[in-house]
Image (tube, rainbow, N blue to C red; front, side):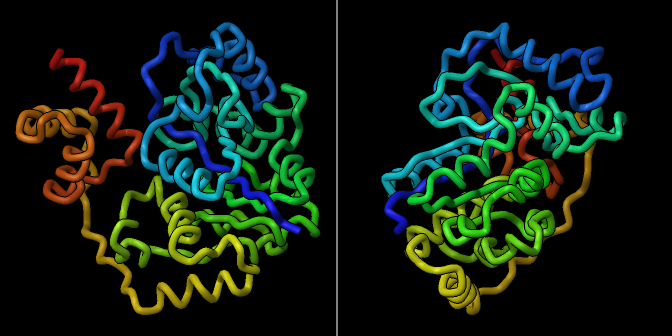
Amino acid sequence: MVERFGVITNCTARKRAIDPVARLQPADLKGGATKIATRWLQATASIDSSTYAGDLYVGRAMSESKAVASQLNGSLHVISAGLGLKAQDELVPNYDITVASGSGSLLPALARANSTAADWWQELNAIKGTPMPLSRLINRCGETRFLLALPSAYVDMLSRDLERIKDEALARLYIFTSSSGAKFVSDRLASCVLTYDERLEGLPGFAGTRSDFPQRAMRHFVEQLQGHRLTHTSAQDAVQACLRSLKRPLIPHRERKSDSEILDLLRAQWTNHGGSSSRLLRYLRDTALVACEQSRFGSLWRQVKAETR
């Protein structure tokens, strides 16, 4: 009988400004996943673990995950490309590495070595002595129903780990991801994926950015549908019934610009928007119609902020 709940979410590029920060130098990003992971673990070992995992990451994806875990009186774990699987009350170092695009991305180095994000996750955790940590957690906690909210890059990274989840544990797993992320889920786990889509943006209080879509969908599922207590079939029916009357939003065409062009726009609009990151991001996307991924925007916004000090 399921009596407990657990939320599993991804780490975010936005972190609290805590120094020092573990990073790899360009010379360290050579070789395959095993060599890079070995150097990375040496780098993180030299940084004090002084912050709880649940406090290191900031942004809506994390706040939504915390809200769901609190509502369910459940546990919260973070999937980190740099640290592995961490409970929210584990002390961790600050770091800059990711399998998503943007600052600190491992993807170019892995591609050069003919390695993948899944190779990275497997090697990182094997060296740490915790192989396949996600499936191990889910398989061991037989009385816990897990809600897993991850963007596509992290579902891809975890694809082998997810395959190690036992058949009898699948009924206790709900996966929230984008349509792109669902493509990385095998047929065996397909029934675990809740089929939310862009129509979620039409629900008051649940609109947001692509980067926090899985977590917003998870909160809606728990808060509005009480879906965490439903079987997979009933849960899917509830989601589809809710979305059926909604329309997919029209996505405007946004122009791609260089970092220097976006920096000029941010500088010109800084005072008008009080330096607010959220308002400036909305200005870029909704008014200037510029395409800018959130982690990239965050890096550029911090650069302009430093100039204003």
